[in-house]
Image 1 (cartoon, rainbow, N blue to C red):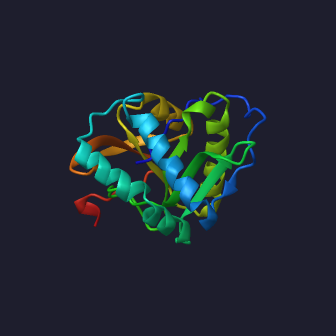
Image 2: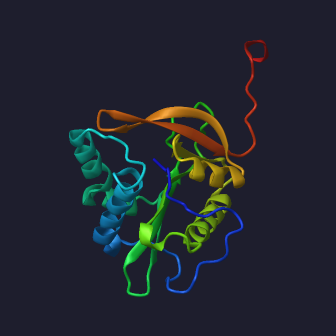
Amino acid sequence: MSTTNIDTLPGTTAPQHGFEPIRLATPRDLVPLSALKLQCFRETFGPTGFNIAYPPRDLARFEREAYGHDKVADELADPEHRTWVVEDARGALVAYAHAGPCKLPHPWVEDDDLELCQLYLRRDVQGRGLGKHLLDHVMGWMENAGPGALWLGVWQGNLKAQHVYAGRGFKVVGDYRFSVGEWHDEEFIMRRGAQPQVLDSRQR
């Protein structure tokens, strides 16, 4: 799920002072990064956010499998994936983004395509331009990493994030169901890049 809690739109000014430069996450970030991912998920989709009524058992399973130390360690160790983090002036992680090979269920996905898997900010640092700054950084890396198309999945109820991504050239090309245990969130699949040529049966 790359549905984000981006709170900025194109044209927002640069981040205010108080944040360290964006950097790649390392294995030493494992514990605080795992905690940050869980906090951001709960702030975004929990009772004080979109308030999705996940069944408790499904929610507990998803949080354990998606944000546990084993999962985050695997992501950090995978050479095909990148995770970026931002610290505040005290050294606490306050934002992160994660990108890697596209795994979205869409027939246009090709081997060299990339996916923005996650981009989240802690609620208390939103509204200061950090989301736009981090998105700019990650998009720059993805654009330079190869010739493939760029993809993301976004919860259908997150209109603000959809607006941000549309402003970056992403278009909705499909939908899918994102599993949270046995619960399923309805998500849009968004893509940026030239539309592939689809041959009809007479041209094959």
